Length: 297
Image 1 (spheres, helix red, strand yellow):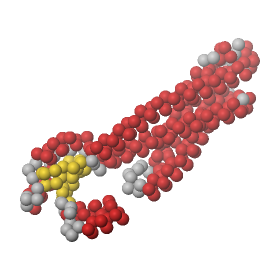
Image 2 (cartoon, one colour):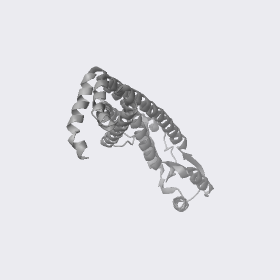
Image 3 (cartoon, one colour):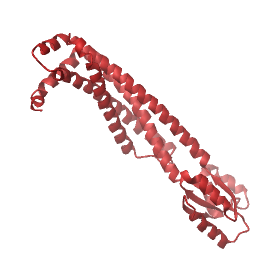
């Protein structure tokens, strides 16, 4: 450890010298790695936001239960209480005719004037039942068994379609992660191999002086880590700008959509991209160093 700390200055100088030797190639390597990691980060961002959206929508999952008009208010109250006892239901409440009309007016917005054409309120009272989405089938079966229930409306199809989109995004994300890993490893290993070839005389000299392989190879590992970290930083900067602009647009167009906070998304994606950058930089460098025997001869 003392020897490593004693030589740390040499390692940094040697790494910087290797970078300067092929500065243009290394620059393009940083740009290419940054664009690849940017693509990875955007897929990861979409997956993260999509999962958060699904989780929040699942918590908001509800069904609307319409009951017979012939039952009394007491029986309706008993029906609400019975639904609260069903496994998978965490809340149930009665929505009267006036509130049902008000909810529809909110949904219609400027088009709500069409409701003025009706002389009487066309909306019936119903019971709003909030449920756990994974127990929906069981809840629907139990609710339909209750006396007085005429019709049950659920939003399962919408949530299932959304879940399908997220699952597709996860598959796409996995493929892109695989592509990012392979491409970055190839780029880095090529750059390391080129650096080894360009410094083969110095490597042979160090070997003749008795320098261990770890001493010779460590500056190349530092170069690989530097290139991927710079690429990761570039990707994070582009992702941050895109997320901020995207949130601003979503906030205006879809203010009702439940999303994680912008700061939370940026922080999580930044940590993920940096971690992937470090991992790929280390693996790519070690893979490139496998040719040090050939490059140093």
